[in-house]
Amino acid sequence: MLEVQEREGTVIFSVRVQPRASKDEVAGEMGGALKVRLRAPAVEDRANEALVEFLAQLLKTPRSAVRIQSGERSRTKRIEIHGVTRQQILALLMQEV
Image 1 (cartoon, rainbow, N blue to C red):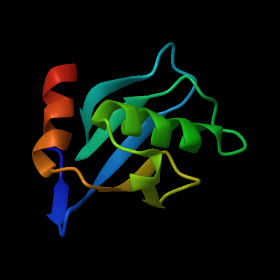
Image 2: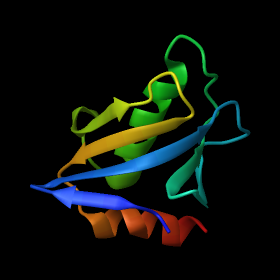
Image 3: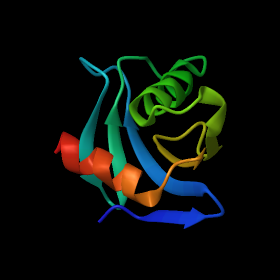
Image 4: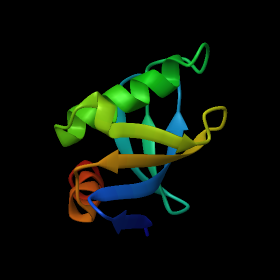
């Protein structure tokens, strides 16, 4: 089950990133985290930038509202997004699986 915390207009959740995938997509849930496949390689912060851009596009929110809270150098990251709800995050999982 995807673990999403919601407080004061901000949601916080974990993302498991798979870099160098064939396409950018949400690929389900893995160990309580949203699994995201990205075409970008995990070098020079390109996968992190691609993740922020991808989540902002999916949730129709500005890039500035999406922040990597922790895990910049790890495949598992804590993401903080301002201005979206827990239901919007869970809906991403439901529509992609």
